[in-house]
Amino acid sequence: MARRDRSPRSRDAPVPPDTPPAELFRLGAVPGATPGKWISLWRERMPRTRLELVEISPASQRDQLVAGSVDAALVRLPIDKTDLHAIPLYDEVPVVVFSSDSALSVAEELTPEDLAGEVLIVPEDDVLRVTAPGTLEPRFVTPTDTKAAVELAAAGVGILVVPMSLARLHHRKDVTYRTLAGGPTSSIALAWVAERTTPEVEAFVGIVRGRSTRSSRS
Image 1: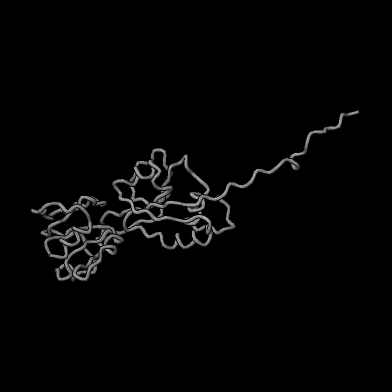
Image 2: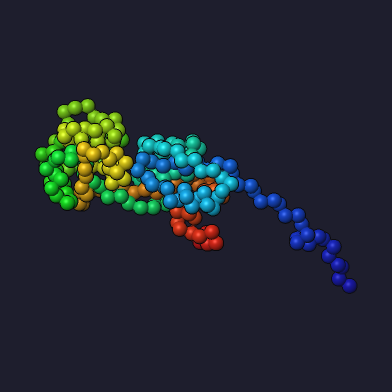
């Protein structure tokens, strides 16, 4: 007669408790990134985990992730993806920012050739690295950031080229902007350290990808 198996059945084994959600999820965001709608969805779906938005710069975005200062971040590409996961989200068109009384405002759209003879201001935090044949180099100190560069453009001493979100972020009544046809785009991505793919990171990935609360991860 076969010996009866007296080992406890798996269904009788104690089930380990679910890991409680983290109390805080830190989301980094470069200037111009617009995570508002995703944050609203997060608050609906993850009410037990507070989301803290942390402003980071493109120059420090990778360091902030690696150091653990943020759990995930909306970054500007390119970024060194070593040990990181990065999901491209959207591209931004480039625009030319200039004084509102500039002759450039007559056109609905500009080309690099339209910028010939203009002083091209390139701030230290520039993210596009635009070169336009025929533009002039400034004879003043390079501004440290985009905000200072916009102030110079408002004074009529030059123009600058930035992603549209930055033009909107630093909008003033005395400046305007036009799309630069054929100019370089700037891409925003969601990035995080691969070995720190926590349930909270996975939840935010699902939100930005448009998954519903009942969707699978596939």
